Each structure stands twice: as C-alpha cells, then as structure tokens.
Image 1 (cartoon, rainbow, N blue to C red):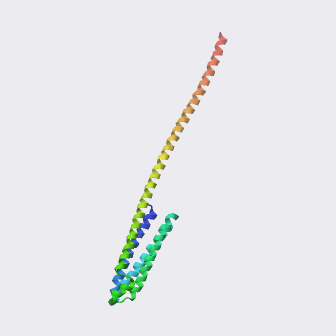
Image 2 (tube, rainbow, N blue to C red; image 1 turned 135 degrees about the horizontal axis):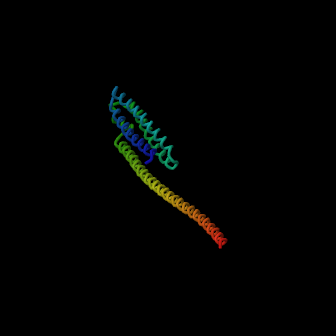
Image 3 (cartoon, helix red, strand yellow; image 1 turned 30 degrees about the vertical axis):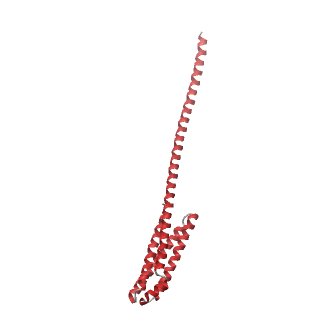
Length: 200
C-alpha cells in the first residue's frame, strides 16, 4: 500500500470514530442541564473542530493522487463533509434542547432508533468501502512487486549479454592479433627462403 492511500485510510478511520463519538456526546448532552450540559457541548465543539481538520487532511490526500483515484476519494470526502454538516446541525439544536424535554428533542433531531440504525448502516458502508480500498491497494502492491522482479530479471539478462559481448570482443581482438603474428611469421619465412636461395 502506498503512503498516500495508507494515510487516507488512516484519516478515514479516525473520522468514523470521531463522528460516532460526537453523535454519542450530543445525545448525552440533550439529557443534561446547566453547567454539565455547557461543558459537554463545549467538548463537542472541540471534537467538531478535530473532525473538520481530519476531513481537510483527507481532502489534501485525495487531491494528491492520480486523477482516476482522486475523483473516487473526493466523492468519499464529500460524504464525510455532509455527515459533519449534519452533526453540526444536531449540535446547534442540542444547545436549545431542555433536559426535561429529552424525548421531544430526540424526535426533533431525528435521533430515535431509526436515525441510530441509519447512522450505523452508513458507518458500516464506510468501513466496507475502506476494506475494499485496502484490498485494491494490496493488489496494486502485488502488481508493483511483480513489475520490480521483472525489471530486475531484465537487468540481469542485459548484464549477461553485455558480459558475453565483452568476451566475444576480446576473442575477436585475440584472433586479430594472432592473424597479425601469422602474417609476420609468413613474411619472415619468405625472406629466409629467398636468402637461402642466394647461398645455393
């Protein structure tokens, strides 16, 4: 898995966990009153900011990959932005909800069992998508490994061919030198033959 995809998945998991925590804290805040409620909502404010920063990091990672992957990841970022916007809206409504009107506030915010079920289903889909992305990254890494092995084999073959070429060239040079020596010896023999004839 390359670093960009690994980071995106890490941020994605962080956001899903943070989003679930924010939703839980908002539900809890609605049941509180006074200072306790104020502290809980202040805590949620900080979590909202952290979630927003995580989404920004995901957005940056999504824009840094190849166009075909970038579009897919940016669509996921849009989904997370919409989810965070919904959480912000819930937080705003929770500030005006009175503890004694807990059930009414839950109905107003859409935080009943149906909402919880749909929210969990959405997170399950996110985790499923993350799993599929990891599998795709694993296949990509396997392909890269095979490509690297093929390149290494090609380099080895080229090196062997170069070594053979050097050997053949050396043999050619040796043969050329031997031919030169033979020509020299032949000339010497001819000269000696002519001198021998002069004496006889």
